[in-house]
Image 1 (cartoon, helix red, strand yellow):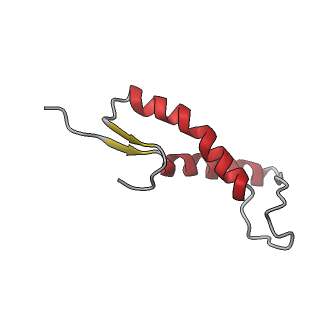
Image 2 (image 1 turned 135 degrees about the vertical axis):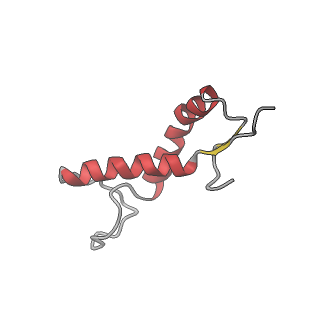
Image 3 (image 1 turned 90 degrees about the horizontal axis):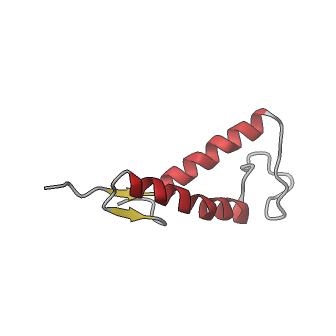
Length: 81
């Protein structure tokens, strides 16, 4: 009997965005966003609706990857099983 494999995509999507943020930070690139406070140096490079948009954009490719890997259940918008 095949074991049920549930995959939550949000942690993977967030990891990909974090890697991309580190890449941008190493190169001194900032992404302008009116939602960020201008004096907040600790604010993420990808913030607010930009973060949400990237999360949405990563859903389809990661969903396809999880499907091809044989996941029996894919939680596209969940953080944990």
